Image (cartoon, rainbow, N blue to C red; front, side, top):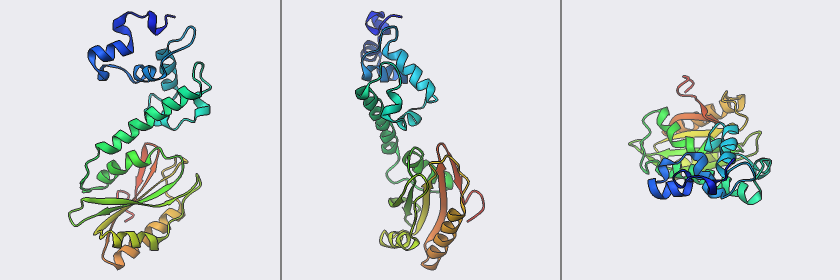
Length: 226
């Protein structure tokens, strides 16, 4: 197996990026540029192709990997593992920047679009509150709680306080299940009911409660439970 240095110039990732642009390279080739070198018999591109394949060819999934997990691959030391994770997380941060600053939430699907890059890859449970104005445009979001893998508790009084201080006309509640199961728990149902009742008491519209589990989600509104 030839190393990258032995490839024809037009086949080398760095040279191809310079000649044709970064968008002509695959994810494996782009990450290979960052890790720089391979091992005897395997180029950096070969190594990254193997790693990406094991993570479903998904940068979001790869971003969840630990340094120790990546160091199990031949040719990947601590520095390279950190570089790979940092690159994947940077890609995820870019997704957040691409969201419209004044996005309007006209449906649960819009709320899912807003929260997905923020929630789907979290290793621990977090609960966020999305604040909306009269025109259903996003005013901002608030982190209500952060917990472990088992769950994060939410104080409805805290939720209501943020909604009122943020002068929200409507809100969307969202949290994630690191377990990968989208099905709401009894605690989730109780939280949804109490939050909806509290918001109704002060004339704030409780639009939805969305649960993320990886790439999947559960919407209380879409399931007719709000």
